[in-house]
Amino acid sequence: AQTVTQSQPEMSVQEAETVTLSCTYDTSENNYYLFWYKQPPSRQMILVIRQEAYKQQNATENRFSVNFQKAAKSFSLKISDSQLGDTAMYFCAFMKLPQGAQKLVFGQGTRLTINP
Amino acid sequence: IAGITQAPTSQILAAGRRMTLRCTQDMRHNAMYWYRQDLGLGLRLIHYSNTAGTTGKGEVPDGYSVSRANTDDFPLTLASAVPSQTSVYFCASSDSFGLNTGELFFGEGSRLTVL
Picture 1 (cartoon, each protein chain N blue to C red):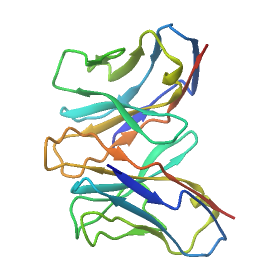
Picture 2 (tube, helix red, strand yellow; picture 1 turned 135 degrees about the vertical axis):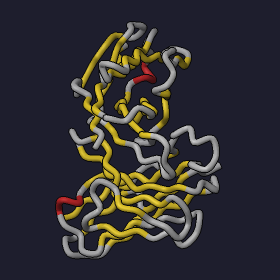
Picture 3 (cartoon, rainbow over the protein chains, first blue to last red; picture 1 turned 180 degrees about the vertical axis):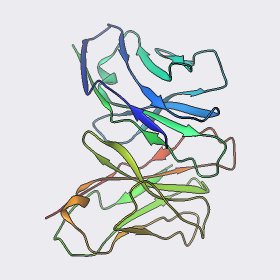
Picture 4 (tube, rainbow over the protein chains, first blue to last red; picture 1 turned 30 degrees about the horizontal axis):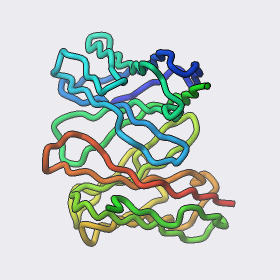
């Protein structure tokens, strides 16, 4: 069974700073996806970024980027130029391939607060 | 576009009562899921459905049942609620037959308190 661990329950930074959220996972699979989801106070989960395990290049989406270390089974999220709207719970998630229904395994979450 | 609609938004329930959480999607996604979110545990999969007419058990299925009579609806039923089922429940959907990007689309959650 796969497990996902987020060791930082809470983090807090000043607006415009850069922050990195950590995530490690355990799997014997070779083909999988990794995700970061954001859950703002409204509760609705939103996909932030996705990484395919077969790709060596780290995924980026505007201010969001990942550091994917497959051998170390590490998948951290970097938020550059943080904004007040980035305040949210962030969840790291794992999905093995191939499969029908896309069953994600989530980490415990990191509560990120961006201070003005 | 509504996406995923869950009802009720919040509910307080006496232990032993039966409760159905409703979930409807308008994206014609083939796959649907129910997760529960608990502090310190993240989200855990309860049940899922790959297509209408089929369902499967997730990580924490005990005490819950689901049905998938059509593509759009995926209700979650607690036959006899217990306090440990106090949680926030999220319904989600995905198009696993399409690009299979792995992206799930979530509802806004249903907060359930069992006393």
